[in-house]
Length: 284
Image (cartoon, rainbow, N blue to C red; front, side, top):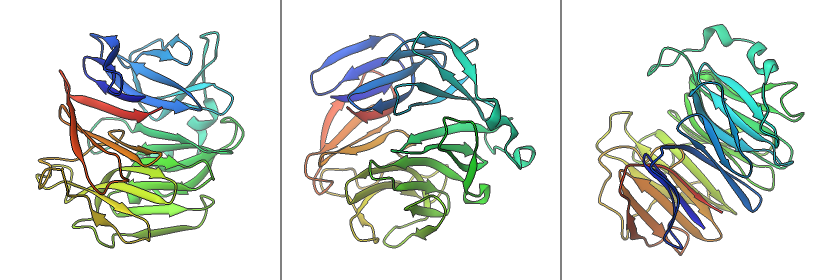
């Protein structure tokens, strides 16, 4: 399945099926062979269902045991149990330095993205750095400082973690020792990242209000621009959550158009025009 979330529904592009109609998809997450969607910033649909008390959800993740986690405004987290009960992750609201977190776009920090690896759960706060927990949220550890201005965190099945940040692309084997690069990129401002085996994909531009966005691929640490079948440039950023890769396939959403590569990003095709702006892209 290739799930395309939009501001007016959720679609499986591979089958042409509309899964949710007339509702805004805030974020998508995949866990194993299942998926879940955060809808209208409040409702969890998919792996199991639940509802937040307020429409303040921003991101979603599925933990290895199937538990769904929702990132909320103000850099807060909530766990949604399989029976639909919602519990706040209070320990995250006590991590050091929270009082200094600032968001350039909103009054409070965003829980912008989350990722789940085989042992750790990663939370990207905008702007408050990247944090991880290996005990279901009881304790937290800082991985990336707020100054990097991270826009998306992704984790692979082998435990590696990567981030797209305003200062470039960062990756780590353990979340403690990090490497950074902008090699091959036309600019250092990154908004999205996707991992597929030994291949990494990022979206890059010259800033938040760019008219010069692009997507890149890397297998060696230096990035090469993805060009064949894509626009000469994107008149904006390919945003966090709108780029994904799995099994040699890559997909991105920009405005209401979906572009897909079936050869690990070497060539691309326009695969669909959605009826509303795209908010999230995920392979299942």
